[in-house]
Image 1 (tube, rainbow, N blue to C red):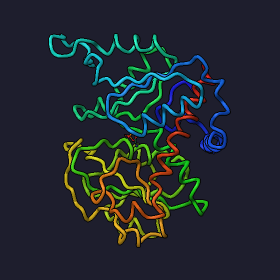
Image 2: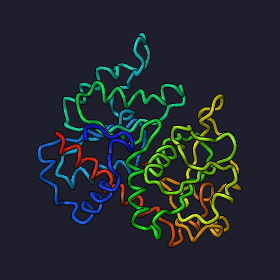
Image 3: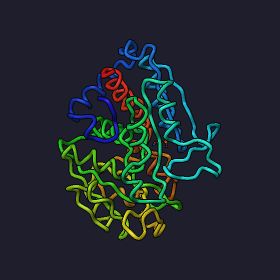
Amino acid sequence: MRHFTNVNDIGDLRAALAEAIEVKKDRFAFTHLGKNKTLLMIFFNSSLRTRLSTQKAAMNLGMNVIVLDVNQGAWKLETERGVIMDGDKPEHLLEAIPVMGCYCDVIGVRSFARFESKKDDYEEKILTQFIQYSGRPVFSMEAATRHPLQSFADLITIEEFRKTDRPKIVLTWAPHPKSLPQAVANSFAEWINATGYELVIANPEGYDLDPKFVGGAKVTHNQDEALRGADFVYAKNWSAYEDPNYGKVLNMDRSWTVTAEKMALTNNAYFMHCLPVRRNMIVSDDVIEAPTSLVIPEAANREISAQVVLKRILESL
Ligand code: CP
C-alpha cells in the first residue's frame, strides 16, 4: 500500500481485519520493518487520540517519529497558488511539502475541512498536494472528507463485539454547538457500506450527507424509527453538507441527544463515538458510562488500525 486515504486503499476488508487481529496479538512482532525509518506526523488541527495512537503504532514498528504542529512553531503556510504573499504567511505549501518529504520516509497528515470552499474541501486539496509533491507515502490522519484510521478502528471494534452475522448499525446525528466536518460520518458510512452490514443513517432535515458516502444505506429523519432493533448506535455530529448551508449549524435540537430512553428502543445496542464527545449534548452521562459503551475500546483500536496501515506502507517501501 502506497497511500491510505479511504476504504479502497485497504483492499479486502476481511484480510485487513485478520491482520488487525494478528497485530493486536503481538504488536511488537514487526519492529524490523521500521528500523531506520522516520514517520513525520503533520497536524494542521488539534488531536489527542490520533497523535498518541499513531505515534505508538509507529514506535511498535520500530520507527522514529517527528511531530509537527503547523500552527504552533512552524511558519504560517500559504496554500493558494497565485497569491501575492505580502500578508502574514511567509512560506508556501508548495515548497514546504517537498522539504518535509526530505526528512522522512512516511508522512501522516491531519487537515480538516475549512468550510471556505466546499469544492476545495471535497477535492481534498491539502491531502492531495501532499500526495502529489512530497515524494513519500502519505496517509490521512483525518482529512476534509474522511477519517479512515478512525473508521478502520471502529470496524475492528464492531467485529470484536458483534453477536450476529449482519448487525444493524445506526449512524445518528446528535447536536453540537460548533460547525464540525462531515468527515467521520462520511467515512463511517463508507466503511460500513463496504462490509455489507445493515446501515441506517438518522439525521434531521438539512443534514443529509453526500450521496456518494451514503451509498445504499437507508436515510431517515426519524431517530426513534432508526434506533429500533439496532445492535450498534454510532453517534456523531456533523454540519450541513447541502448548499447553501454547507458547514453551517442549522439547529442544536437536544431531542436528538442519545439518552437511556433512546437506547431502550434498540436491541440492547452498543454505543459508539469517535471522541472527543460533548456529554449531554451528543450523549447522556449514563449512556457513555454504561457497560455497553465502546468509546474506550474504539480509542484503543486506533493504535491497531494505525499499525496495520503503517505496516503495509513499510512493507511497500
Ligand atoms: N477520534 C479522533 O480522531 O480523536 P482526536 O481528534 O483526538 O485525534
